[in-house]
Length: 253
Ligand code: PGA
Picture (cartoon, protein in one colour):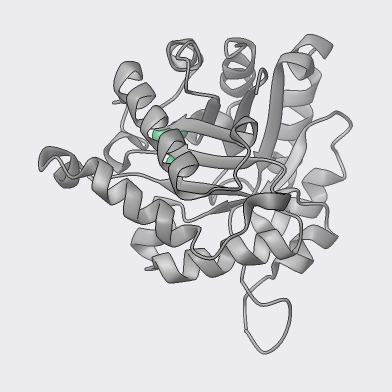
């Protein structure tokens, strides 16, 4: 993609008023050029999706941070992909390392969620990434391969508008210690080759690999300057209007 993709993951932050204020502040500072050069997606807390959407007056797209794989039924506390679609979510973050860690989300659950996204025309943003120990033991690539192949098991890529994978090394998230851009670029290339070699019907042009982990307005360009990195999934800086807008403006390909 020629445009960079910048996604704000608001995580479990902000109440209703501050969520609405944030989306207004972000939009106020964006220009036509920003939308021409950048695909912008915000993922507020699930409970504020609708109220944030109601304040959206620009081409920013809405994404959720999680969803459940069944469409409806006796699944107390869960929210389905069909429900997310119904309130205008075009994207869903799937398999974030915080959910894999705290909620014990497994590769099998992630695969079901990817399928639910596909069945409801939601673009999944698949998160993958190695731990510090796996990195030290030189297991990064085999671990990422396992995460990708199990997440996409049985998936037919024919009707994917966009395949988005966020490579987020766990040790880099919220740490002020981002990955080296060259290393992240090599991993992005590895992921692209892996997808092309394993899924015959994949359209290369639809593949987008993002980097995530301690990205800010100062370092974003060092990542998007890399040939294989198509944008970023941003956590901490995405809930600061100046931080997020700065990342967007500095991310042009
Ligand atoms: P961070 O989080 O930007 O705060 O490191 C990234 C993420 O968890 O998606």
